[in-house]
Image 1: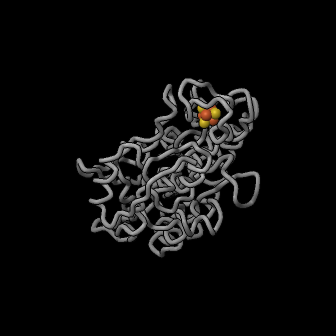
Image 2: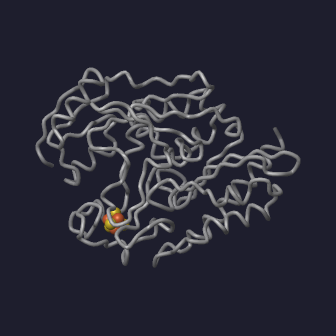
Length: 331
Ligand code: SF4
């Protein structure tokens, strides 16, 4: 691990000025991913700016009926909050499927957004990895790629985004608020993470000197009937092979509203717009769910070890929507 300086920022302005003054610096919150990356020599900040005491740990209802979540809210606190459990159950469920209880107690909302892929080659300094060292190649293409992407990948990188929380946020039309010395801006969650293209090392839409300060959830009556389904190799402490975040509203047997996002399939949470388009105003039946799932996965491509994820994703979509159909009827 490279030697680094440590400073603690007492307020947001101080934190923003500190990172603007030193481009190689990094913010640290819960540290559940950054510390691993520093130990492995993958991230080598000259200065670590501790932001854990900044006043960004509130969960508040907004004037328009949504919820604003501070970037330093711990994952476990967010999952357990009554506003989230009752209005956005998909988000609470998604968080609780991630990592372990100990990690959820440490990990922050902002850190969850910015966590990096768990591709094994990314963490192996001896491996070729365009994300870690641009231009070096990608050992996952012909290597161990069981957990890798089936949608939106490129010849440069086939990694997946590891977050469960972000999949739910994508389905819920969340917005990310970021601040820098230049001011504040808001980025739709679905535009926050990037597909790899030719530059897999560029993973998000934020600049190196910007700080995630909050995530905003819009008012979303449909989210009351929402659910997260995660398919993985172990029952806990495992990343998704495929996951589905969904919300469904049915009126008189017809789909009146639907939100759908997939995890474990791409370098970003995958908002399933094509499936949503097909489902809206369609009969709320398993047949419609199957048709929508097939359309969403039509452009999916399998690698040597992960082609099974295409059918798995189709089935996970159908199973999740079918369950919501039952849940909604019972409500
Ligand atoms: Fe690196 Fe991406 Fe290839 Fe993994 S899939 S080795 S992160 S370039």
